[in-house]
Image 1: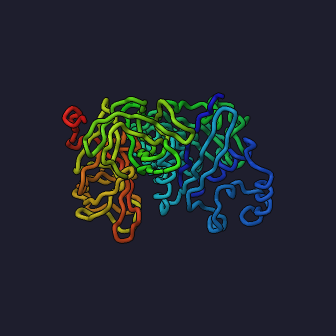
Image 2: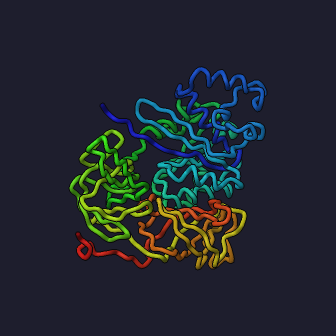
Image 3: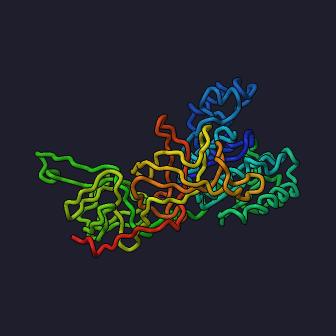
Amino acid sequence: MHSIDILRFNTSGSVDDGKSTLIGRLLYDSKSLMEDQIEALERSADITGGGQINLANLTDGLRAEREQGITIDVAYRYFATPRRKFIIADTPGHVQYTRNMVTGASSANLSIVLVDARAGVIEQSRRHTAIASLLRIPHLVVAVNKMDLVGWSEQRFQEIRDQFEQFLPRLDIKDVKFIPISALHGDNVVQPSKNAPWYLGPTLLAHLETVHIGSDWNLQGLRLPVQWVNRPNNPTDARLHDFRGFSGQIAGGIVRRGDKVLALPAGIVTTVREIHTFGGPVEEAFCPQSVTLVLEHDIDISRGNMIVGLDSLPSGSTELHAKVCWMHPRALQRGKKYLVKHTSHTVQAMVTEIEHRLDMETLEPQVAPAELGMNDLGEIRIRTAKPLFFDGYAANRMTGSFILIEPGSNATVGAGMLLPGSTPVKPEPSDFTI
């Protein structure tokens, strides 16, 4: 049976740019709604729509969201077409909830940045585009919404495109698509619009169905952060008696039965004896599958350790250089101590330097700021109590990312993307082979 791939994407942009309405239109026009959902829309129409169906209510599930007409929390929706399955994260546009936007976009293959055709490119447009670049989202769609309110002006669409193209070269985004739409009326969302004969490109859904995502996953260099040591010890089943497997989600690469692997931080080389998945044992597995590996030798491995391939070893260091999005009202300052959660490993850390903060107006770095405030993007250096084994975020989004946790409140205060260039600690496998 032919498997259909899954595209994960998020919507972003400023308040009232039409993000929730766009998702509602996608679901409605692609006939992905159940009858009871349509009935619920009709029943709730008088809350915000004045008796008219409000498609934003499909994703704005909180009562406060419906009353205020804004998105606060991240809402996930699922739908499918014959060509592809989709997981949508509707993320907030308000600057106060930028941290929620980072959460929703962190696992996306594609980001849709909505721009109100009347307002053009504003600070939140630049901020969300910069965040998409920092998160290394491979594909970007700039959806110029509410084109009906500017008379479907090709000139206005080109002006907004020019504004984006002035700062896009400063960001690391290679695949960018501009689409003029009206989410409220459905123009160029699922069906082509007759109101824009000058636009010859695909509709939004057609682009989502055809954008190439097969090469988005990192299949170079095995990375398996261990989440759980699986010890069933079932005395009634000989296969499970003294079974010891290491479970986790493959963060990069391919693993095959019989492969030589390196256990970190032990630095011991061993062989993969068995690979188990939810569907049973397999000969090979790859990113992003969840697996349990049984190794040839009995090695002391626990949660937070990592099993890697010998062909491409990660960096290992206590000195980390990272880009960070700060998410908390209490500012990040030099000398502050936090917990770093990296894959399945949590370690104590201290911020040793704040190198720069990104100016959202110019997208130029401000060197050596005193602190990073809420929603600031910047570059910092961190020293950890124990070495972390990692890849640069550009090479592997899963092993190159981390979050900062405030020890007292246990609040997530920052999201970070590791940069290459730290002094690598790469063990020589031959020195440790059993």
